[in-house]
Image (cartoon, helix red, strand yellow):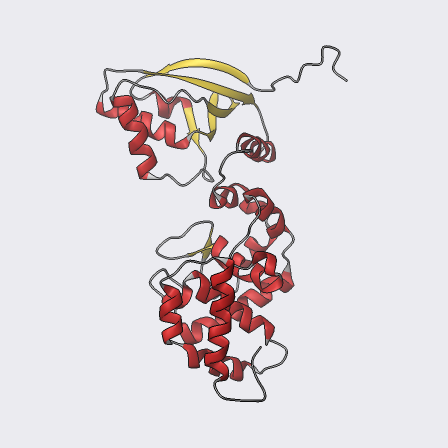
Length: 290
């Protein structure tokens, strides 16, 4: 029990002035940092160019005299652009720093600093990537490269795993509805059995619909989630030949075209699944897909 009843900060605050070239000498940008969004950087850059400031402090882990940047990537990127454009100027910033944190403690502080704010799930996936067991399995025998964020050569972890979670519970249909850190905790529970299901589904999916990229209408949210759910629901009732034949019946179907132009709410995913099942089953009265 604190004798003075004060909840004390663990971070130390300091104010520094940054000039051209100081950022590279002062800060270490981490490999698992947030994705940089150009629109955000440009907005912050305009604030500086207009003589203003965004005021909010950077958060770092001070190790051997260097500041490991844990929170503030967009701000430091904007400051760097500003100082490159106006090398004679300086920018004053607040830094809240911890000292000699471990990597686990860095993740913990990142999470604490983002409590109560709108959290980008991919940012958290990057932070906790090496703490999620199933990410190690994706590096092995998997038909497509999986990374924390979309790229030209890989698919997004979140979209893939959201699809799988939606096959296990209606709670996750249309995506995960908890916080970003709740999603991370759910992902930590996924093991070898979950990986096997995801891998085998993606093999069947890609054999019929091709690469799961942003141009593929069968990889749009409500369509992809519906196909994953149908595959899982019929996994132990149908042969792989039957499932692939069912997928062929909806490849390029008008209902796929329709839902691929819409979003991925729970209601859309549920209706998409029903419509795709109707297309698969047609007029048959027995041996139906469910």
